[in-house]
Image (tube, rainbow, N blue to C red; front, side):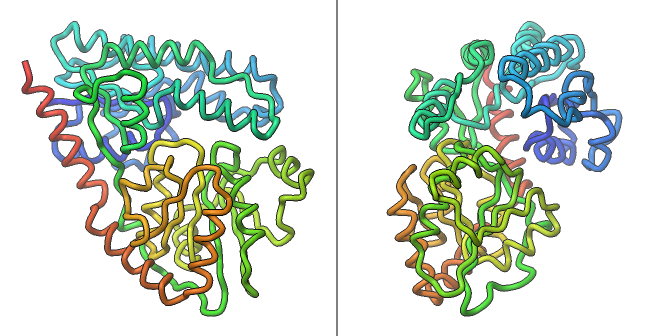
Length: 387
């Protein structure tokens, strides 16, 4: 069985590609990333095909956030459409074609016409559920939001309709599709793995302190606005809050204007993964109160470093750990619940340490990307074998 993959960026698709390549099943991977950004992916060069002309310029343009939204949407639409047309002409004949949603329809149809199978891989909630949640959140905070580009919604829904099956990373995402009328018989649950050789304990959280960590792009979607409120309610003589990931000056300004921005917060920006595992190992808890995402991989990464997690129910957390055992799961937008769980861990260091050890054990049992590759191969084999 030969499997071709596509992604306009990198995401988890290259982790999957490495697993398929190791099993001799990878027919090729197609990306919008420049070839120079894909040199160290552990995949034979002749199996990596790129169309970087639009995505590369988009990545390199330094003032994207200063452009009007309609210009950004036009650029992103051009990227998806042009990449999709290139895919249609470029994807090799294969038994199963797996495309990350948003630009796969033409190549999927070609795979079907050749007698192959077409898998739409969706990393977030159903795009209409995602749009609704983001509209609600921006309205709550009085931040203008035009919604997800209708052209992107139309492309995705066409992919959902025509694919043989849709792979999703969490129960939250699966339920979002079911709520929009997609039959569960067409959905396949495929939670992401974690690189256990890259993420592991390198230090321990200091006694007498309480270090709260957030990892992700700073945005309303990621729920930073609820984390800072919960942190301000936390009572501890040596507490700290560290934000890792792309900062948002606009969000910081909004929270400062509403007197919600803590004076002692540290904003580190992007941190390389070798340094990230050190920060995770020294943190007492990772908090991820996202409004919507498929399965935030930073949760498993933190668990692999012995750091427990407090996350919202919209992060895929329930597919990684049990509430109250290796971490806590809280409702979205619930500052009181988030604050209560933070205070509980701060007040009971022995419980927090035990929870961190259980998190480490749990993620080891879940397995790394090799287990993900096994599950993916089982899905594709069953699909290929079904006439």
